[in-house]
Length: 290
Image (cartoon, rainbow, N blue to C red):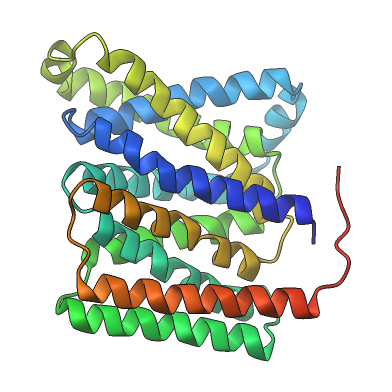
């Protein structure tokens, strides 16, 4: 396991958490227009990364390899669905509900890591996961309703990560392929259904929409780099960073910090502290990778 890639995962999730501020700034724009723009500009930026890193040969080899593409195609549609749901939630005062889903995602990752990837968890790590699970169960019980948006977001992103774990493709190549698969659909749907919305855009909206490509491609490239270089369980725990930041951003925008959210955060913080302690206690020297 590379210490560098652990920090990459932390950086990736920090960007995702802070990006909720950006998506909130786009709340006045139709969520589908934001989604289509996100796909198109992410494809352009990812292709620029492919050219800059001289990975065109790998791109060609990957596109023509059905053993890889049979995973890349569903991954593209799963993550686009996740993007659309998240954008809608950020623009409709559902930041904290969305964050509940991403608090559940690491639990799903943990189960998949042990069941399908044969990863092992120590006693302290298991205890940390059960504490986190208890927090989620208690918060849902206090919430008195099932957070559907959160569950959908958490499950879809976990499925995306699981697929990414099964294929080893250079990060920029991977993100370009996923986004270019979606680009024809985005262009057609934008042309057919979004003309009034495009006409209503203010001049400053255009650079904001272009920026969605950066906020999409960059963290996904970081995620793709981390997912195949650290245990999936460890990656799952770094995913608590993003929803924790989103909760605090939601508070800044006036969303209620209800008792169930306080309980959940308390459980998660205890869980993270225990997991971190377990990692420090049992850590072996980690090989730094260039």
